[in-house]
Length: 365
Image 1 (cartoon, helix red, strand yellow):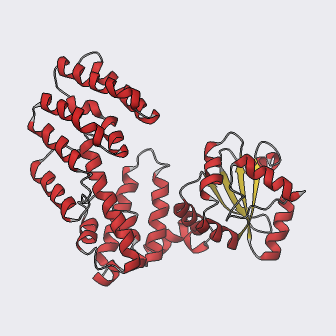
Image 2: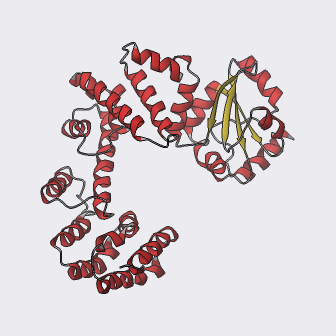
Image 3: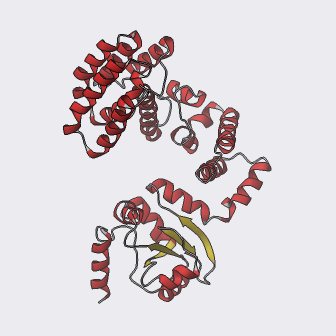
């Protein structure tokens, strides 16, 4: 009977056989007993039938091998529908949003409450921090203020602060604190420390611009990392330069000849444009910088079809910015260009394009 229930529940949740993370088909009391016998914590996933993020966690995150390995080693995992069989427990634990995950020990003491999901690595990292008494916010703050500067503390403390940023209305003070902590720590490291795998988080998690000194060090020493780290470093470098193109193509970065030419040269020298994917972007950016907007619009018509899917989305997202300050005739031509693309656009791009058309055709332009 329990096997049948498990199969039905897995089908309803869209979970591929509940692979990897072992959510047991047992009651709350049975989970407590199992946790005591196995010296584990109880992990409860409070979900609802209508919760999209709940379904995503069930379908994409919990089935992953790395998540399953981590969760099964530490927890007796159960799922409770907060509007059905888990209604009373959801009230007891004051569950207000979904998904909400809680961990309790065998004596029903709450170890942590986590609201919302996340990507696999971040999800695991956050849970790992929350179950470690040495990594509570208060304890990490005390350790840091006492002068401890170990990779484990810096990584965990800054990750916690980064998560806290999302809860703040005024995010700048906390972002400035994170930036200061990361750079102060980086400056104290030797070259050996900067290249060590335990400090790889500095590059993969906290560098936001190719102009950051940490990013520049990573690029200059990309071949000095160990083989395992080198792959992640190269992926990070590719992501950072992609974001630079993104900012130009979406109109968020103003054209400055020397800065742009340096960026273009670096992209080519690093082999990031070996497949020529960025050549159409370079043509658009440079044509617009020359100021001939009729030539630019003609180039848009020629170039848009050969952009890859992601670059098309970026280009469309803020298309009207390219035509700020231009006369109504040119803005109408730009609008007609967008309208001509609508029939072949995907749903997400249609939303952006429609807004850009309104911006181009709106009153006052």
